[in-house]
Amino acid sequence: MKVLVTGGAGFIGSHLVDALVARGDAVTVLDDLSTGRRENLATAGGDVRLDVGSVADLDAVTRAVEGCEVVFHLAAVASVQRTVEAPIDTSAVNLGGSLHVLEAARAAGARRVVFAGSAAAYGDNPALPLRESETPRPLSPYAIEKLASEQYMRVWSQLYGLETVTLRFFNVFGPRQDPSSPYSGVISIFVDRLQAGRPATIYGDGGQTRDFVYVADVVRANLLAASVPEASGRTFNVARGEETSVRELYDTLRRLIGGGPEPILAEPRAGDIRHSRADIAAARQVLGFEPAHTVEEGLARLLASTAARRA
Ligand code: NAD
Ligand code: UD2
Image 1 (cartoon, rainbow, N blue to C red):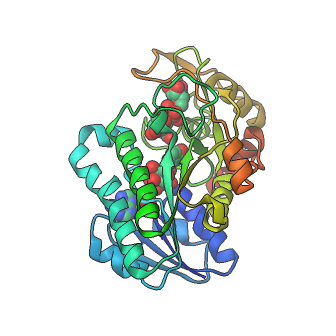
Image 2 (image 1 turned 90 degrees about the horizontal axis):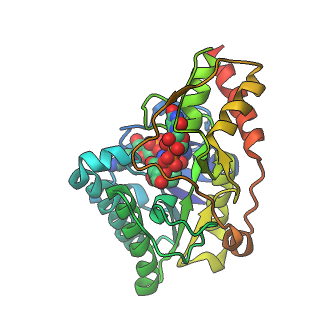
């Protein structure tokens, strides 16, 4: 099958590309390489074409989607901070890009679009575990852009019969996640510091929790979302359905590494959400999704992969 992965040179997208190539698909990647890297596509080998271009450019999307049966739309400015600083620019990518993907997919006669939504749509909704039917409470331009894109996905399936599926990813972690910004995923930062024998910072008391999900499980959810007929027009949480505290993460990593310094304790982050946990019953029932990696297994794999890369 011929498929398009927007954002395929990024952290999650490149793992998806690896899986698609491994099963024999012909993959086109549309990526502007703003945070993605060519090197992330090096392991895929096989049949991958990289189009360097932006989803904000309708012509680029139209060219990339030609002949594709399925589009995985992951391209986005994934930094909440960036969307706060430059909402007009990021909306052109995060919302405008989604509309371009839908229109280009429809014009090209693609069958299905699978969209990378976000748990950010729930904001600080305290009704844990979070179900897809909960009222969204976006707290940032990023969350609004993701949520509005989701609505476009749903409406395009109703208006035009283009099959669309939104996956609301929770806190994804794994190899190739960039640890270089203070707003990078907490696990990527902790691993980067602890493997170098340096302490990392815990904001607040470390009792805050997140629903961490290993990237291979997110890839699996994407593959299921592309193929299960009943998924069309719907939105699904992608998570483990479990909470892990930041302190627990730090301690597990130290144990897996075999030691390491105590964390630096700092003031809680402004606007930080205290707890997050998904209800994944819908993904289980409709997609047949079952997360295969515990957080600890995922951490062990991540450590092995980063240790190999450092060596
Ligand atoms: P990432 O930054 O590694 O991946 C995003 C990719 O999109 C990068 O390769 C980047 O170069 C590309 N991109 C950015 N702007 C583009 C544009 N205008 N045109 C074409 N390509 C563009 O981040 P990621 O963590 O792999 O995120 C992938 C998707 O998953 C994003 O849509 C993100 O919002 C979503 N998501 C991620 C998480 C997470 O925990 N990492 C959680 C929820 C949702
Ligand atoms: C995630 C997204 C963010 C936004 C938000 C919406 C990532 C990387 N971030 O933020 O973009 O969608 O969800 O709710 O996916 N922490 C530390 N030390 C560090 C870094 C983080 O203690 O060095 C804490 C942080 O204060 C928070 C927790 O770890 O309590 C998780 O932080 P995060 O940035 O990885 O993820 P989150 O859920 O806050």
